[in-house]
Length: 142
Image: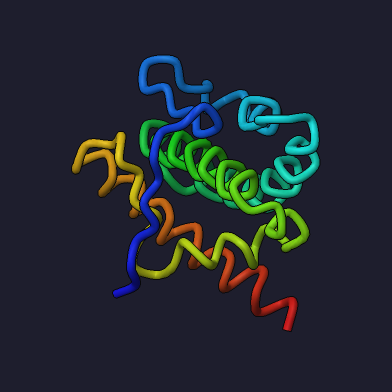
C-alpha cells in the first residue's frame, strides 16, 4: 500500500465541513477551489475530467449515494488545487496524470480534518474515480 500524503489544513486548503459547496453546483466548483485566479484554468480541466464520472454516478446510484460521491469529488478537487499551489510545477501536468500520483485502486490522500468514517467514504470515492480514469482516460491516451 502506498504512503499517504499528509494534508494539513491551511489558508489554501479550504474544507469547511458545515459550509461545503453544494454538490449540485458542479459548474462553480473551480471558483470554489481557487486560491488565485490562475487556479480556475486547472480547476476547469479537473471538472471536465470529473463531469462524465458524475453523470455516470447520477444515472447508476441513488441520489443520496451520488451526492456523497460528489461531495468527496469536490474535496478531491480542493485538495488537488492545494497541491498545485504548493508546487507550481504540477500546474503543467494533465489533471488525470497528476491525480494518479495520490489516488489509486486502494485509497485517496489522507485528509486530516476528516473523521475515520469520512476518510473511508472519501477513499471509496477516490478508488471509484481512479478506476474510471484508468478505464476511460488512461487506456484511451496510450
